[in-house]
Image (cartoon, rainbow, N blue to C red; front, side, top):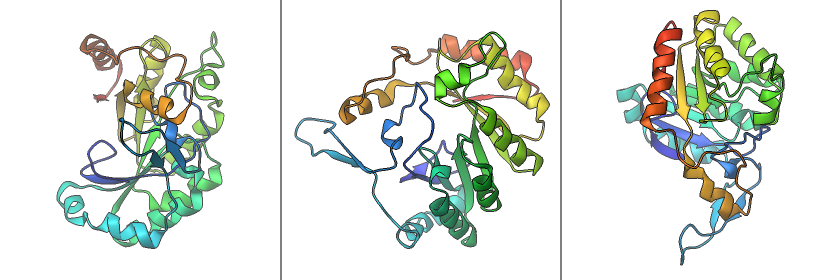
Length: 257
């Protein structure tokens, strides 16, 4: 749980991270969220205790903590964001928490990869004000398995869920992690820009540049580091190149974080 979050939807938000994810993205910066089970990690610094990632909780315990920051939500247009992992991987808890937040008139976001059964999104959607929808990779005729190679899953289910929610007039912001030399190909950048034309009712497009902050978590959890991650995050020159591309190819502004 993270209070005072500024990058998980509009305004000041409380972000709840639910463990468990069906994808295995090669750049994942939250490896502690992959398993649905609580995990201990080695201490971050000498002399500290091992860190527990994850614990069981209930709506009755967590909702009052979310409601504590209602004044900040009201002042900034913020609210609750469910993230992960993949929050749709725990659909019953996610639905109950989203429903409870909406009953308190708290704005809700679902930060999702889209990789869950369509029936799950059909149940969650009535309680979600805004979907933060990951768009991670693009298949091409010359590289038809790119999405599976980079994320561990083909894109068909994800694309189906996106189109279903779009057709139902859900509010969706496309969020695109970009890893230099991995998925920032011209084909993928062009596909991101095309979403603004093909799906003109989406609420925005955001670029999430890769950063190395999560790499030490792999070490502490005893997991191998991802094989295809850069040694450094994208510098300003790379970000400016992305920005120029989208200014020239996208019909509305793209936010680069």
